[in-house]
Length: 92
Image (cartoon, rainbow, N blue to C red; front, side, top):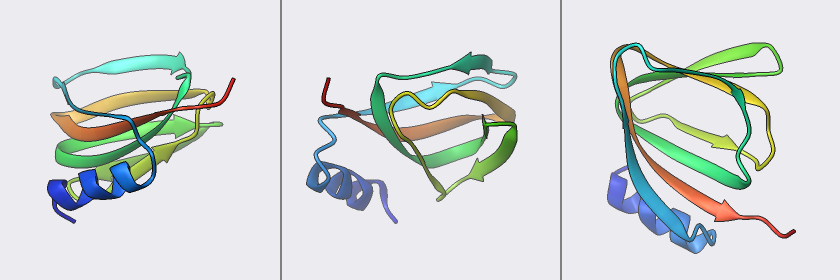
């Protein structure tokens, strides 16, 4: 899926904010949560996301989704990572 197609899908699914994120080699963030739904397309490098003790790596062309409030850890692999991410506000 191209980044343009991905952005179109995000807009159709009511993702109001769409941004590009770049994380350097060695990036790691311990357990945290977001107050928004996230959906991301990896455009370069690789990222590992760990949820409930289960880790999964995502590379170029992969899409990952994280519902708001999901505790997770994330880390970039040897090449760092770049991704296009949509953020969708959740009802309070």
